[in-house]
Amino acid sequence: MTKFQAEIDVMPKKEILDPQGKAVTGSMKNLGLPEIQNIRIGKHVSLEIEAENEEVARQKVDQACKSLLANLIMESYTFTIEAV
Amino acid sequence: MTKFQAEIDVMPKKEILDPQGKAVTGSMKNLGLPEIQNIRIGKHVSLEIEAENEEVARQKVDQACKSLLANLIMESYTFTIEAV
Image 1 (cartoon, rainbow over the protein chains, first blue to last red):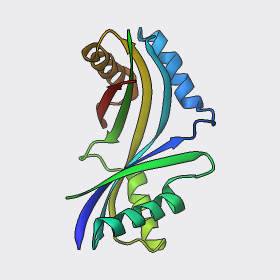
Image 2 (cartoon, chains in turn yellow, blue; image 1 turned 90 degrees about the vertical axis):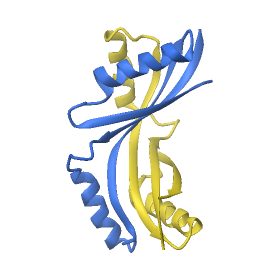
Image 3 (cartoon, rainbow over the protein chains, first blue to last red; image 1 turned 30 degrees about the vertical axis):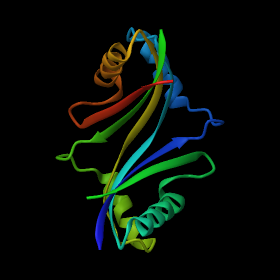
């Protein structure tokens, strides 16, 4: 069994309004950083997984995203995996 | 002025207990994925910034992280920047 480290980003879908991101974009102006725009805020999840190979690890992380980490109605996810 | 896309991860520091991550690690067992361990959950922020060059963009994103996006007592951040 090999240990892999997965780094997952779960973000609100483009079509979905992101009120937290909008609010923080407004705050950037007040902070003197008006050149920062279009902020979107989601989750970052890091985890370790033991699996026979990278393909199996990738499938299991995908299953974890679909069943628990992301709400596929409102969010999309991407992830990277590497052996540690 | 060039437009850059920044991708920022804000994570709870290693020394800090991450109760949300611990809870989700427990749920993985119930989901039939006990090989997933050590889950830590933070924020992912994506934003656009206009700047003269990458160095200036990097400094401004760093300033935004320090002053608003991350709580440096409990969280650490990393980011990548690329021109779009």
